[in-house]
Image 1 (spheres, rainbow, N blue to C red):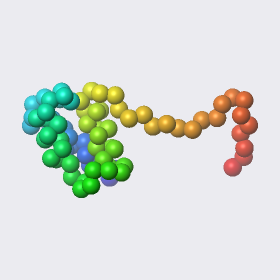
Image 2: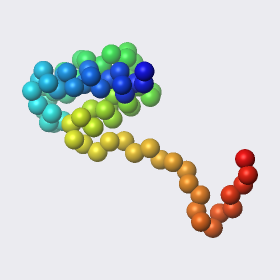
Image 3: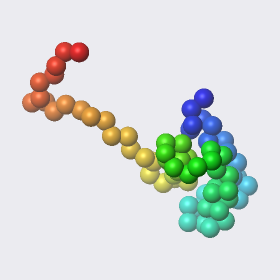
Image 4: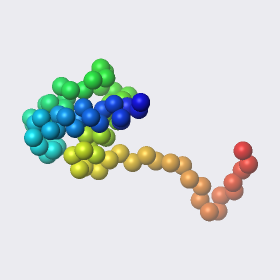
Length: 78
């Protein structure tokens, strides 16, 4: 199970219990802060937690940057 799959139902339940998905609502922010299940608020799990909150409240989700070669660059064999 991924972090996102673990966090999504928790966040959805908090949003449902508070009754709003406005990210500026202090009641929602406090409830989400209290519901964080992974201990320390840093590293990858916390980033996924914050991104899932953004996804469920309609804000812009995190963009994963991928390296891509430009057309004029030479592709090397693996």
